[in-house]
Each structure stands twice: as structure tokens, then as C-alpha cells.
Image 1 (tube, rainbow, N blue to C red):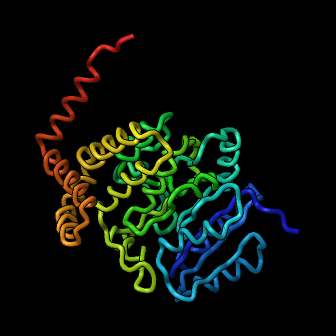
Image 2: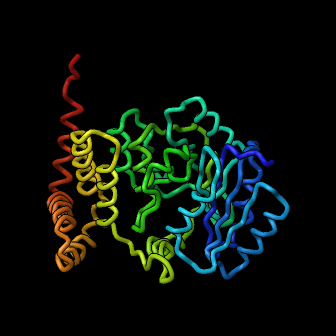
Length: 337
């Protein structure tokens, strides 16, 4: 009888033949052997299926599953997790690469820290040809590796990029979350729910390579999340993402006072003082308010009005200047013993 693998690598795919072989080779070249690679093909119409079938035929660690119709990326991300057997789980994209020691390093760290829910590594960036690139800004982002829940929520709220969703996750903890939801930014929501349940580890080596592409625009990625055959179109909607993040905190296994405090912290840092996020929320919050009013969704309406009030009151020069001044004054105050 085939032994149950300790690690499941889940690869959700749709029309992903470009770079796919490189990604598959980087997973199968791991120096850690006890894993399975579960592929779920969302009814691809290109060469994705034939490529995956060839890999599955020559490597018993690979299993290939194909849907008869495209049900969208959200469904597919959940599907690969449901098909997995491992104690640890990791999502893998069709175009990113991992160093051979990625799994062994992360597994060792997780085994040494049973309280941890997620392990990630430092990140490198590559272009379409696989060559290292120097990003035009700090794409590595703020990593949610704080020792406390409050620190981890703060890191997610202040970040502009959230790559650690692709780290190695303790599967039993992921099973406690809502997993991928039909909302823009579902990966950030999953990351938030994990961080609310335990600490995150960071291996200080660049073992994960994210491929930077001009095609990875917000609109392009949003189109793939849901389809007419599945969940329906899922547009870029930062206000809805904010509500889902707040809902994640509300559903966390924490006491009521802590949950309320964390929601206030999240709203302030994410909506008001995270410049790019706040600017994006300003573009869609009013249409969302109108839709909630038309549907008489009073709870959603109230929450959106709070978000709108914070964004429009503080997403301006006066608000941001006041916030920076308070931070400088706080740092200048003497620390009490």
C-alpha cells in the first residue's frame, strides 16, 4: 500500500501551458521526497492537460484531475486542498519556481515549531525568461511573522503585497478556516485567517521565485476567479475584500474584546493609513454602499459607511500628515521601564 505523503503540493490550473513545465520541474526536483503533487485542471483548452498527463505518467507523485467545465480559480484553489492527503499543504502557481531545498527547509522549521501554522521563505523575483530582476519597489512586502496576533494583523493591514499565501501550511489549521472565498483578494483573506490561529515562520533564504509579468494586472487576475459556469464574475473590489478580512477576525477563535480591538486596528491601518489600499477603496466603496442600500442589506451598509467615513476622512494629506506626526511623537517619547 502506498504510504500517505507528509506534504501535499496543490497546483490549480487553467490554460497555463506557458512556463508550466518549469514550475512542475522545480516542484519535482525538491530534495524532500515525501510529498504528492495534486493538479486540478479547470477545463483548459490549451496544452495544459497533455503536459500534466505526461508528468503524471512518469512520476507517481503526480496526480492529475480535470474538470469538465471551468468553475473558476476560487473553486479550483479549494479543490486541490480537498484532494490532498498531507499533514502539510502548499499552493503552487503554474509560473513560479522554488529552490530544491524549499520543502525540506520549511518542513524542518514546521516540525521544530508545532505551534506554527505557516512557513515562508525570502522571495526572489524573475522575469518572463526566468532571469532575476530587481523590482522597482519593495515587492517583498511586510511579512506577517510577528510574535502576537496583533502584530500579524498589523503586518497584513500595512502590506501592499501578500506572497506568503504560497508558503507551507499546516493542513489541519487550514481546514479550520473558510478557505478561498468568492471575493477579490481571497488569498489575503486566507492568510489573515491563518495568522489569527498561530505564528508564521520565515526561512531567511531566497527559496521562492515569483514571476513578475505585465499580464498580472488586477483586472486580468480578477477575470479568472469566477466564471459564468461557476461562481459568476468576481470583480476587483477592495471594499468587499475589507469586509471579508473583518469577518475573518470576527470568526476567529478569540475572545470578543480581542476581536473587536483587532477589527478596529484592521480598519484603521488597512483603510485609512495604507495609501494604495485606501485609494483603491475610495474608487469602489460608494457603488458598494448604493448596492447594499438597494438590496436592504443593513449590516453590510453600516459597515461600508464606516469604511467610507474612514477613507474619505483620512485618505488625504491632512490625515496622513497627522498620522505620521503622531508616529514620530510616539517614537520620540521616553520608554517607561
